[in-house]
Image (cartoon, rainbow, N blue to C red; front, side, top):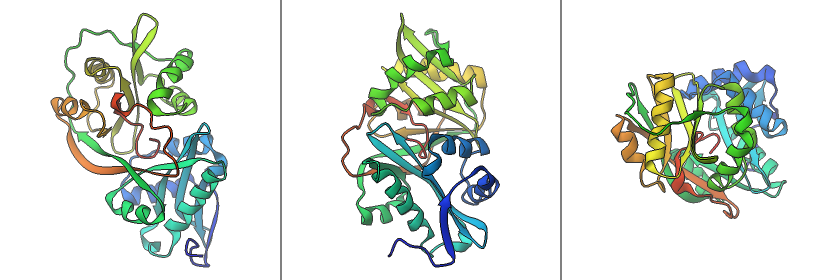
Length: 288
């Protein structure tokens, strides 16, 4: 079959012993994930993370996550540069597709322009554009809107607010942020009602802000200010999506510049698009 790699390559499920090699592969492509992020993927779906192995050495990776019974995500598709053009990446992709589609899920991903050329040929359709924005120095603005810290006690309320916006419950992802980065979460409430929130994580190369959602641009700005006041980051990434009409100008006002584009794509029915106009920053191309 065309989606099979050369015979010297075997695919199997990922395990924690693979993480050092996964990190080595990640470094070859310059991505921002940490060892913690690999563990998070394995926690989300132990049967949905795959490695390609040659002579006992991991030469490729792919990870998936399921969001309820609505759609799944595939990401972290990396192949050792010395082993590219051998069908390894495509085989890993198909392992992820088959895992998700056996559950009856549509499949989503955020593609690079180069990756889109492949995905166009295997049934994926464009949803909208997005881009990574970056700054090396971020200075907060003064905001009169008080934002509170998020804790695990807020998880149910946070999930109830986020699910309609994202398109599905991703409670396990939100919980992972609050567990691994307990000081990097803030919310704005109107009485008891959440009107917006912001989460963040540490990365290998930069501080990554997102997911980040809000009812309006003023609330979004207040949440970003609260995060910056607390963390005072230097190099910072935020990934924004085209349907939000305010996120670009908001980031420009803080000195961010666009780094590189992506394309959100789906295979199957896109029955749960969420409310992307309220999303000011995604979790990253690997999580949506």
